[in-house]
Image (tube, rainbow, N blue to C red):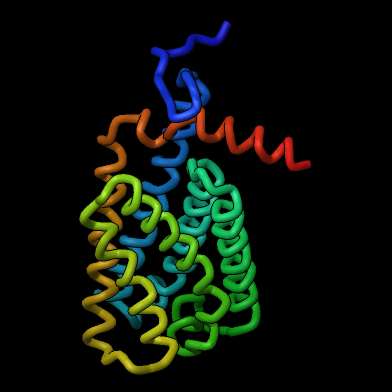
Length: 215
């Protein structure tokens, strides 16, 4: 028999938070932590040893870890607007497929291929757009200071590199800032109470009922 927690009053009625709900939040936060760790370690290595061939190969594996973590986070995140949720998942899928294509097409390690051929960011950048969506959601729902910086920082760095308008020194600062703020975000998520990440389940139930009625 499944054990439920206390009863909460939502906008459209009462609801309870189950063990499965809590497990989903733990999965979401764990996936974000993996994505943040992989991205931040990769960024640090890229900034400190950008020409080391062994490091460059490790960056590919770290990007895989980042991408998998991001995918799991997008699968388990709670977003009221189903359309937005699906769009972010599609963005991740496009970015992942593009990254595989870049890795297969170019002979260089993935990080170098993306850096030396900014056009690759048109595809791979969709994954970072999905990550920006998570940061935007966290800013809107929890007013987090780090995500307020991350939301504009990601497109600034990616579009700036794509358009070749940012000096290398500025790109390094932005990348380092992204890595640090991402880790701060992941750590703060771990210490946050679980119920707020689940949200108002009565809203999800209401939206689901409305969708069924429309069908």
